[in-house]
Length: 348
Ligand code: HEM
Image 1 (tube, helix red, strand yellow):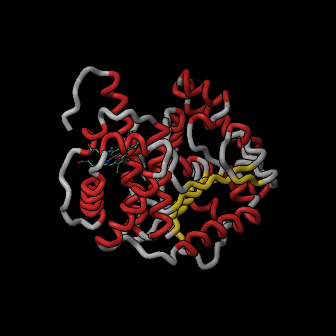
Image 2 (tube, rainbow, N blue to C red; image 1 turned 90 degrees about the horizontal axis):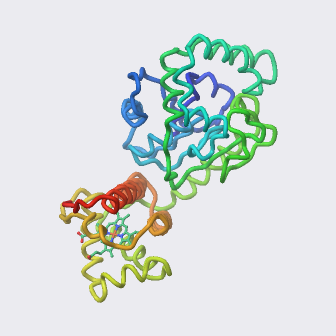
Image 3 (cartoon, rainbow, N blue to C red; image 1 turned 45 degrees about the vertical axis):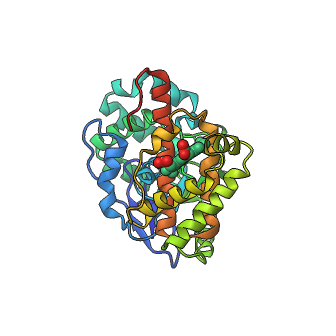
């Protein structure tokens, strides 16, 4: 199922020109945020709109792209497509970084925000004609001011370091809100502005179709359903680890001639997580607490793991395996940083 998340305050009207015949679409509706509510807590409130029993593809525009990336931390997603958005604060231009660092947005009164929005929107969004200008003004008019203030504050305080493993970023070459020169790893739409979901739909549609087709082609694989699937995943993954110049010395130093035992343990670990059969109990972090591992080791681990999953499996469980690995890798890195800077010893 493909879920669409619109930009700041906008609703599904911005997707009206994107036809995508044959694609099952759902539009995520905004709900009311609490004052200063975290993005993660806000995204939890959106989850009831998503059928988590089926494969999930998220397509987010601008602020919707940020929400898509946050949602993907909470639920396993097959793919995220972000359009006219950013993957981290590093992709902000210097003006946005300045506002964010000094928290200037917090001292701008609401009336000024709304007024300047009305006056400058056509310029910043690269609106092409009167009909588009009308649509944009209507969306601005309908935007709940409390939501607008909350969302701007959340964007300005967004801290994102690890990208989703299957993220596709489509960006317009003349986007004035998030200028393209700061954006990395993207598919470019020539002459596309921040409103290109409305006025460059003829170029966006085939691109999105292609991405969705790729997912369908991968679907020739089956999901991780039995213990034999788990064994195949674990065996193949650790073969790759043992061939990795970066990872193999670390594993071999600790595991030595206990590889069979390690593989057995890892069958149990993944069986417990994915097949809901209790076969593992332990405190994984403790085993990693003193290893000489940094972000580059985790990035390599994750990319080998995702590659292994994708080469054999597709489906809800396959997405869950990649999602769980990414969450654990993130958690290990936070904890490692914490304990390296604090004298306390980890208990779990
Ligand atoms: C830089 C990346 C990583 C390295 C170098 C690494 C290395 C190791 C090593 C050497 C062991 C064996 C420890 C021992 O037997 O004493 C181990 C165990 C384990 N690792 Fe990792 N690991 C990494 C990332 C991860 C990630 C992202 C996960 C999340 C799925 C994970 C899950 C586990 C589990 C569940 C065990 C078994 C723990 C136990 O014995 O109870 N590792 N890892």
